[in-house]
Image: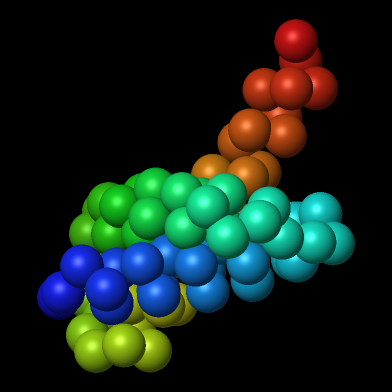
Length: 81
C-alpha cells in the first residue's frame, strides 16, 4: 500500500475513532498518528484472532478497530494515573 493511502486511511481511522471514543477528532496530524498506530495495533489483534482483511475498506476497518482499542487503553492509563 502506498504512503499516501496510509495517510488517508490513518486520517480517516483516527477521526472516526476519535468521534467514537470522545466525541471529536484530534486535528489532522493527531488523526493520522492515532490511525496509523491503530492500524498496526489492529493488524496485530486481527492476526491473533486469525482474521484477515484486504483492500481499502478492510484496511480502514482494521485501523478503526485498532485506533478505538488504542484510545480505550490510553483512557484507562490516564484514569489510573
